[in-house]
Length: 257
Image 1 (cartoon, rainbow, N blue to C red):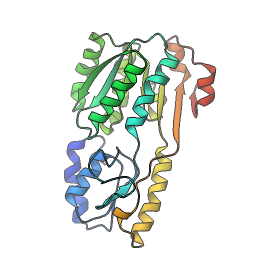
Image 2: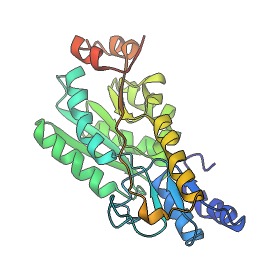
Image 3: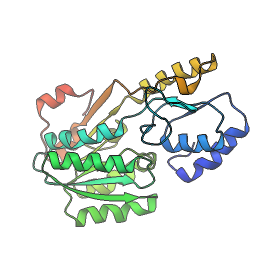
């Protein structure tokens, strides 16, 4: 396990490749990239991670080609929904900070998605990128100085590993926070909107089974998840003086009280 430390992935992938596995299962785009470099002739099933086409792992979703297949976590599509949900819960917000991992392989597409959403909802977007945990406090301070009133944390293993640290910094500014995993509102964020990771991992078993039975990874279409979950932390909403609309509560898969 890299625990969000992407710098450890090449060595971990090298150790794994040395064992000559029949296939490799990965859970982030960075892990997929490291595994593909360390074991270029080994089939790889991405259980979750950024779009393999945008990341350069596959020719297309329908016909991947090469040695990589599996599932995408549609992060760019989800990023466009973050502001819609955030503004439904906090309609007075006019300036939103976006925190991103600069090493994310799809950061350009995520930023474009955020910019489209900001333009659509007539809010000002402020961006900060980090490459390591030590940069977080400076990044949050930069967003605060730029007048941010809320925070969108873009999907990233690094940022997920630093979730509690980020929330402590953000909530000190009384910012409502939204990100991709339900672990965020469990730890104090206002909202999350993202794929059901467990469902993705279960579906990855289908790919593993097919490949072990002789199918070529490049011939198996890459799937996008069908199930997306909304989680809301009502305790955080109350602390921030926000009232969550009833229709939003009815849409939620998880409500934390």
